[in-house]
Length: 145
Image (cartoon, rainbow, N blue to C red; front, top):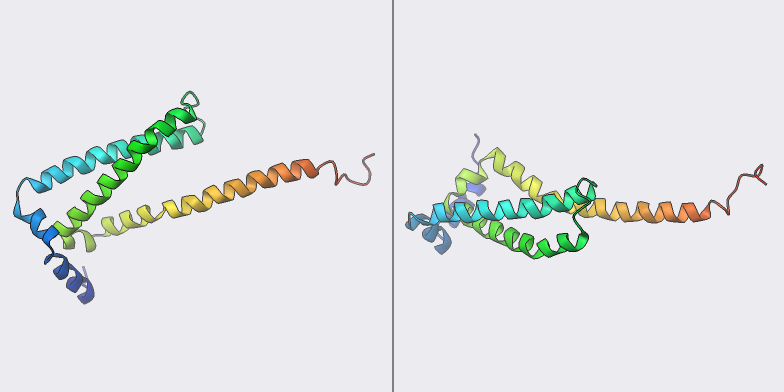
């Protein structure tokens, strides 16, 4: 794989940080981070997964208030995942920055911004359906009387 000089400089800088020193100096840190990361991902997948399944109409028995009750746990899980992920990167930067799977993961992490677009489009389409439905009686074809 081709190496990028600026990336190498960035990685070298990361390895000079106290966070990198901490992650790499104690043998118990990495497995602890992995445990926290995967537990948090499990909680996050559960909360996001339930919401998505509800939106798709596959778990109609779960009420919106029940989904709302899981929101706090999902946010906490996301924060824990983000913090532990940064710690992983600080401990083994080249393992991540020169890894195509990591780059693809970053693309997937950026995808939720497109979810905002989808949500906005959904609202626009909903309003459009409602407005056009209301306008049906005002724009009748000329032959309809």
